[in-house]
Amino acid sequence: MKNILRKIPAVFKGETVERKEACTSCKATTGKLIGQVDYWDIKNSSIIKCQQCGLAQLDPMLTQEETAKGCLAYYVEESLRTSPRDDERNLLRNFRRGFLFGYSLKNKGITPTSILELGPGSGYFAEGIKSVFPDAVVTVMDVNNEILKFNHSHHQFQTIESSLEEYKPELENKFDLIIARDVLEHAIDFTKVIDNVGRYAKNGGLFHFITPNGHEDVWKHYLTYTYQNSSSDLLINHVNYFDGTGLLNDFKKRGFSPVEYYTYKLKTTRKGQGWKVSNKLMARVAQKKNSDEYVKEKIKELKDSNFIKKEVLNKWYINTGMKFFTYLIAWYHHANIIKVSPELNVGHEIYGLFRMDKSGNK
Ligand SMILES: [Zn+2]
Image (tube, rainbow, N blue to C red):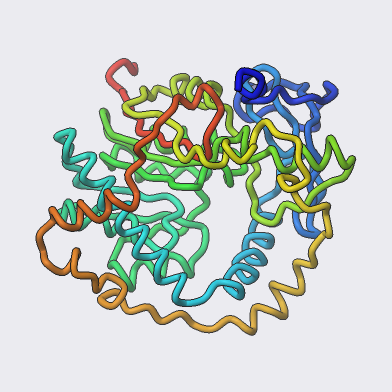
């Protein structure tokens, strides 16, 4: 047992190299080469781990155009292998998670009235929050117009079509809650996203995010590179692999202070993510999957998904109108019971709730 604990989290081996692009977070120009990935057949990049701030990133980073193409290819690929039934289950799950999150704010005495969600996906998370705070106005921002249309027609949310890195002066000081779930790991420059969040938040406003624990998330690519001497497939654009301490420091540097910051889901660590050398944990050796085939051909096989919101949410524990039942079931399914400090770099996903303090500003 002691031996295992000494290995967790493992120290990455790799040679120190000059970077093509500086570290997004701390601007270091060297780092440790720990992986090599092919983003579809679109781009080959190294994964460089910063020795100063701990952030691992693609080097060179993807461009907006490359990201857009790969994301569409991934969307097609994923849609074709997910059944509508599973999709619908996910909507319900996200609703319950949003509900639970809304209650966690309520228990803290917080009542958000203006909410912005970045990269909202189906919008059901925000809809879950709204069922706790019916008067809240929700705005969603995404670069993808299809997502915005879905959010507007399903939930009547206000929409903004934009990349998250782009600064929108008209949003300054407008929101008391901003959300970015599973977004930061995809951002070409996550520091711009966080800076924007800081500007769009009111003084004392909150920022909630979840993002993978980078140490575990990058492990599969690290193994393939280090022990197979190969580059691996990167099909979903995780371009940032966060270090628990480095991410916290980055937020502090930008004027945020943590309200809640922890890692949850430890099953992956038990299975060996982040410390164990095994074939099973390796990412597939790169096949440079043909992106054109997905964005030009297979896209034609996609069927329209016609979810009816009433049916998605047609569950006894939502219909009773007694919020206690909704809370109980949501808690049963999604409460994070075991929480550890992200600074340990173990566990699957990092949960953050940060407060923006502008009172010290000039
Ligand atoms: Zn750095």
